[in-house]
Length: 195
Image 1 (cartoon, rainbow, N blue to C red):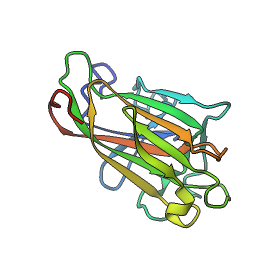
Image 2 (image 1 turned 60 degrees about the horizontal axis):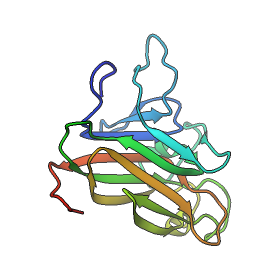
Image 3 (image 1 turned 45 degrees about the vertical axis):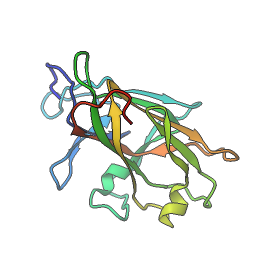
Image 4 (image 1 turned 90 degrees about the vertical axis):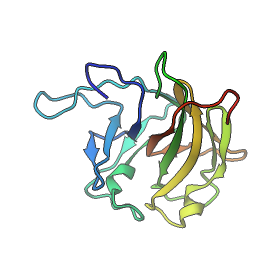
């Protein structure tokens, strides 16, 4: 991305939802905070992102102190210390007008921080309109609070925006949570009618 030039096509983007600022992990990946923090003159990257986040009800982005929040199962605990609470959809522009369709690997990053029993926060995830994760229960999957969970969705065909949708599973009222999303381009053109 450039703060002055075109933002697409995207080769790799890592969004840290609700984070107080951008940060680089030990592997060199730059995690961009969304929503974008107000830039300071000296240190911040003045970059606008055309990401659209929609929430169910009065929920929003939340964050804990990253230095005091230890999340197991990751070498970048701070990625999970913020999240979108009650996200219903997230739209991320990956390709622009005139760009050829492409294939992306998508990684969704989750952690549970609220004390609850398994099966109290269960939700489904759709990518590009197709259900890719059904009945995700973070606590049941990880076995404990503050444990990183990464869900990989390979080979997602994208022609413009990546659209991710979340909905509570039947019988549950707790809202979905998401800490971060990565989209990594893995291919060029997608055949007509391809998956």
